[in-house]
Length: 211
Image 1: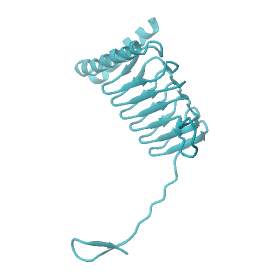
Image 2 (image 1 turned 30 degrees about the vertical axis):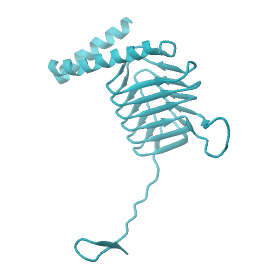
Image 3 (image 1 turned 45 degrees about the vertical axis):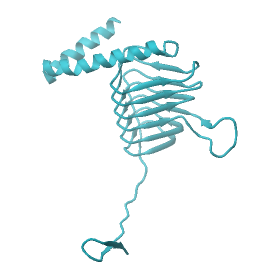
Image 4 (image 1 turned 90 degrees about the horizontal axis):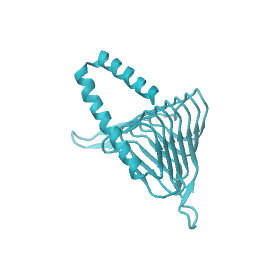
């Protein structure tokens, strides 16, 4: 606990030097409200959530639908606005220390999702450890897998991470990528894109027709 207090004091001192005391007060008021919201969800799901100090900002939510679901949240995890986290069945979600999740992200966990410490996730990222079982007529409508994201990973905006994906430490996932399978440590992952153009013929000033 003492180490946490020392880190908070050092961080505040640095922020005052860089931003000015007025803006630091405004910014940290938002953080304090986020921490209180985090504690609210911890109390709401007392059996399911084990956490240290973390911030859950406005319009973000954690929804747990099963008594067997587990959530582990490390120190100084920061979850920005309009993030949706859902855990069901025997799902186990783990967020390591200093994980940062930006606006409008979704995490859906029914099996296992693990995100290592110091990983940063940009806006509009979607992480799923399962898929819909559309091929077979069975009692379970889901196909389940795992998602394991290592330490110090950077995930760009609008990335989709699918079930049975492992991302190694220090990897960078380029914006707009769809990821499934294994991404080795210390690599940049991106989906190859090719631009294509098709000419158009102008018939009159208001009507366009493709060749």
